[in-house]
Amino acid sequence: MRRGGEARGPLTARGDQRPTRLSPRSRGRDILRGVPHVIFSGIQPTGRKHLGNYIGAITQYVAGQDRGDPAIYCIVDLHATTLTYDPAELRDRVHDTTAILLAAGLDPERCVLFRQGDVAEHAELCWLLTSVTALGELNRMHQFRDKSAAQRELVSAGLLLYPVLQAADVLAYRAHEVPVGEDQREHLELMRNIAERFNARFGEGLLVVPEHRIPTVGARVRDLQEPERKMSTTGGTEQGTVLLLDEPDTIRRKFKRAVTDSDDPPVLRRGDDKAGVTNLIEILAAVWGAPPQSVEAEMADARGYGDLKAAVGEAVVDELAPLQRRYREIRADEQALEAVLAAGAEKARAIAAPTLADVREAMGVGPPRPRSG
Ligand code: TYM
Image (cartoon, rainbow, N blue to C red; front, top):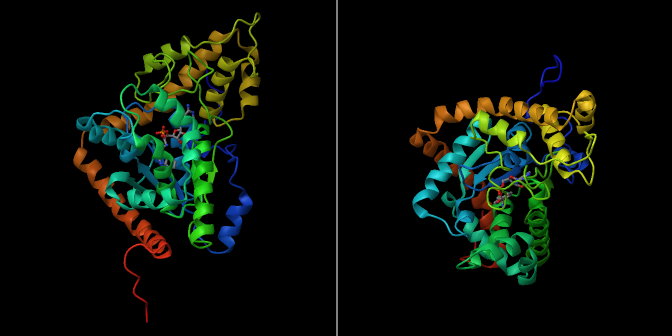
């Protein structure tokens, strides 16, 4: 089911996706001061990117290319080493993610796309920022608690330091805006604390205190089988997780089997006690680029949950078809993907290096900076 005759705006052009923190005023102030508006975000390397990543983050990255000066996107291979992983596979997963992002619409001419491990400034700044990070803060992070509990062998120190590296990712570029899904809110708050504490200790204005940009619809896409949980390849169910590279029939089937509720007659509206239906309505709203209320209005004539599930399944298949086609075209050429990442890393280094020079100078690390003149 498609909305009758109306042109379906691409997800990336959603007008309703106002950020929850980033105020138009703060952006306006930067523009008046002539400060370029820097956007930064990071994403884990995996070939199993899912609809939550797409709606919550990737579509925002694509839209950010028109606003960011520059828009910087990083595939975080260093973060991927904090959980048990296979070294022989990591580079492949980076290539998968690079190809997915390019297929989704990132354009290396209009953004900086690179691999975290290629830019040494991230790891160095991470270490320097640990000096203003409280152990207690790291211990309290929900993701650390969840992920460390799930680790069978070693709970690495890297897992605890994960959010400090994430702070370094953003702060190295003095980014103003960080597009993310809801699950990153806590990491973003910590990042702001770290930046504020760093500035108070070593010099006001040295680091930019970034603001998150979390979409109003689709910030927490839920597992289709267990809608109380977020969609996730690590913590979710196989059947409840829609992968961006799933076959169309697999996508249709996953939606067809989505858990709703036993309301009789069916109630096609969002509600606190209707997690499954709310999730389907929000996914459809995000894909249509329309407010959830208008999806509810469209669904008023539906015969039941089956119609809603079929409509979302079809809309998602249509939305992902061009991405999947393009992915198949570009994934095999790993040299070309490496060339994109190498060019991106060079641009990234040129931005991060001056920040690190300022930070080292302020912290008294390394030799003094030669005075100019
Ligand atoms: P990652 O790779 O787990 O997720 C990438 C992005 O997808 C969002 N996301 C979701 N959005 C909506 N619904 C969901 N179910 C859902 N699941 C994931 C995430 O919020 C994220 O924006 N720690 C980060 C990577 C990172 C980073 C950074 C992010 C490293 N450095 C600096 C921002 C800035 C992560 O694991 O993302």
